[in-house]
Length: 343
Ligand code: PHE
Image (cartoon, rainbow, N blue to C red):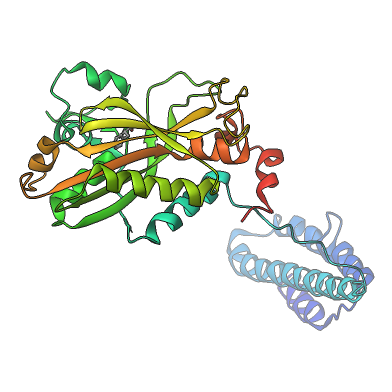
């Protein structure tokens, strides 16, 4: 049997396979269930144990050799097929069109707000979305257990430490960080995502975006605040838009105000968007409370400052006449693709 195997090694080595038919003949002859190798393995079982050692090794080598030859032949065949199908590519066909993407409306409005304020010297500051109680509330003159904290329903983050951690409810927390780390004059805006534990509806969401502004220097006055916001509104909504301030309350500003703009839909005559009042509220603002300046290490006798904060969604809703806030977070392509041609 030993010599038979040796002969076969030579025979198999000499076979040349150049097409799929020959490969199949090779498989049937040597590797199939009724092929030569299968017969040899049957015969092998009848050998005496000492012979098996020698023949077994040779037999296995023969099997491996035959299998490799068949596998190699298959590979070359399929590679040849591949290249022949490549040859069939029709280069004259028009290519698949590449769809142009669009920016999210919140990104568009954020970019234009940033652009308007950086033009007049504001820098951009960013900070963490997970904050400690002090940066979000304490430093901003919210006393412990004061009902003013309920104005901003807060998501608290579970933690083992004594510090209370939370998802920031406004980006005023970033301004605290800036005031602690920089010396006046400070003129900065902080755009970013904020979170409030609100029931989701067409007008409210548990997450939204803000841009808050801060200017601290010697002799900063409410008149500066008004003029800056007037400039912003004219750049954002056009020259015909009027503004008005209504007294309000925030723990971190004194005096505080809310600012309305004349309704951009009806021009101030009255319509459903402005609830027939002719005005729509767009932001909160005021003079930075002296306690806040002191909490952040700024001398409140020497410096004064103003601050304002607005929701980007609100501005976007007015600007693009979007009636449901939830659309911003659903990523519905039918909604998003409408912003292709904007800006
Ligand atoms: N931080 C306030 C809010 O989120 C907005 C604000 C900022 C009001 C600055 C006054 C001054 O509602």
